[in-house]
Length: 238
Image (cartoon, rainbow, N blue to C red; front, side):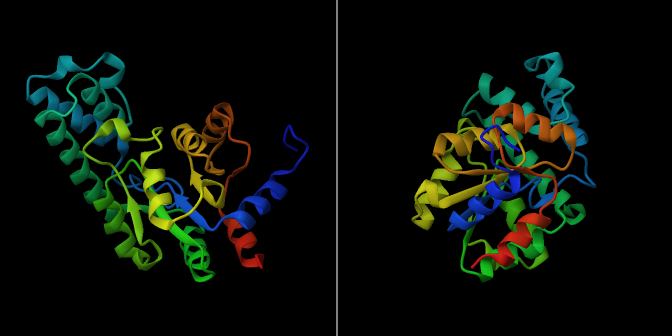
């Protein structure tokens, strides 16, 4: 039971029943992008590239040791926003994401859920901090491109990365949906924060206990550890 006395299953049915548009985070709910091309290694290579430019000192110790390449990117953005250095670093990350696509691991039940939701007339969009180029390459490879006419990824203005709701606003504007008629599926606190700011209901996907804990600490109340109950609910939807 949740604190308001409703069950996760009840909340899940309500979320799915209301949704006319579903906004998907990419890395996590759709696939594990760095399953075979680890995020830690990518972050390390971004740090190494900065060191080659004589800029290793630009990062704090914890930023140099991070397993999240976006932390490196954000750190440089804070210190050199809009710079050529930042643009080169972002392009390097995009190339790493594209190289990771062939070894990305599809999230269990994501493909049939995407196809089923699309088939019943629900509009789908990707709202992600990853590069839209990488997203399109992955969707092309899975035969899912037609399900996602709207893909909104990382822009040149990195201050607009989630938790900023920019990509969600773009998706809502493109689909003509009111926030309350949409649903976002995400696996991080920043996904939840962006959805809350945009006024969009949120469904958390947590593939392990640690991720669930972080989502609940952020304030998410409806969380699934697998997309199977979501797929089952969509199939039962009138």
